[in-house]
Image 1 (tube, rainbow, N blue to C red):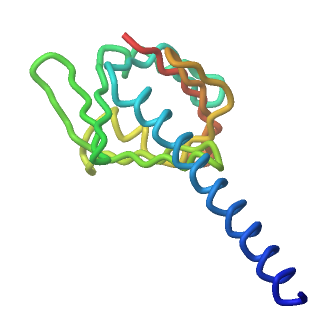
Image 2: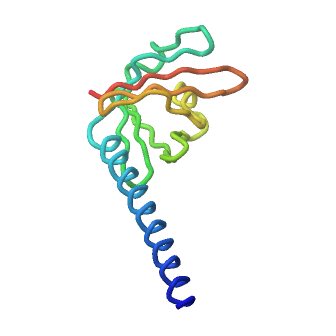
Length: 137
C-alpha cells in the first residue's frame, strides 16, 4: 500500500513536470512564430535620452528560425544572430564586428512590452540604458 502511494505521487509529479515543459515549448513556438513571420523595423531607439532612431530606421530585419537575423538597407545586407529566452523575457542579438550602426543592437534586451506587431525592450549597453521599439512591417 505504501509503495502504491509513493508511485502515485511519483507519477503525478512526472505529469506536472511534463505538462510544464509542454506549456513552455508551446510558448516558445508561439513567440518564435510571431518573430520569424514578417519583417521588423526600428520605430524608436533611445540611448539614454538621445534619440538615434534615424541611424537604424531604414533597416528591415528578418528573424529566422535557425537563429540568424538579417538587417537589410537597400543593397546592404548584414547577417547576425539572435536567441530568445521566453521565461526571462529576453532576446540576445549580435551582429559581426564592423557592422556599423547594427552593432548598436548587440546585447541582451529585456522585453518590457510586446504584441504580435511590436516589441519594446531595454538593455544596458556600454553603460547606456537603451530603449528599443521594433514594429512589424
